[in-house]
Amino acid sequence: MRKILAISLICVIFSCKPQDKKQTEIEKIKHYKMERNERYNELVTKDFETFDIKRFDQNKNENEDYVYTLPNGSRVREFGYKERGYFSQIFPKKSVFTISKGFYPNSNIKDKGPSFKDNCEIGIWYEFDEKGKLIKEIDLDKPFKIAINDIIEFLKKNEADLFSNFTSIKRSYDEKTKQATWSLVYRGKYKDNSGMFVIDIDDSSAEVVKVIKILGKEGEKEIIFYQK
Image (cartoon, rainbow, N blue to C red; front, side, top):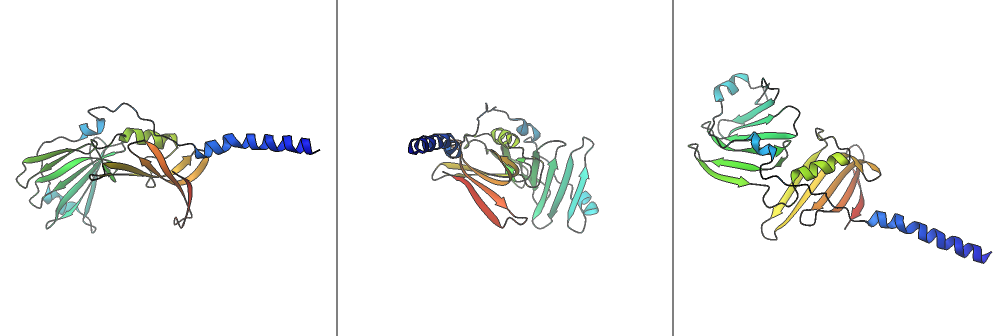
């Protein structure tokens, strides 16, 4: 009887090992080939342009917003003030990328570039002086090893709705430490679990370093699924 129990215990121990390994296995973001000229950079040019203040003032609502649709289906949102300057966001039809532009109070372009939706600036951004002269061209992707398209594919794999308000991407780069990180928020799946997740990724190693599941309608509870 004791021999049978001992054999059974050994079987249970060995049967648990693969499961434990799966739980602690480090996941890496798959890195696809990075293109020198990403498609979202084609959405923005370095050309000088101005903000139509008169049209904006005639059409803005009580919230100082003017929203309209272009003939190609792109949605445009304009907002701002005479004292602080003006802004526009263009949301191309069926695209997760946004064109963001800032304008000086004199209506001349101040800066412009692409974003993922409207919460993560990416790609090449252009800066101008008040007279409209191009003074700086910055590649915001340069410090990062992981491409925004790698992150998008990760979100798709985990059944996140890219167009949902629940889905956001943030990234940061520390000039002193030369360390870069990504933080994703989405409603979807992670491995065999469904729900609302916050995923932190180390850019240098492409490793998922932390996974949090958010519970409750107001996000009042968090469960740490994994932390390196």
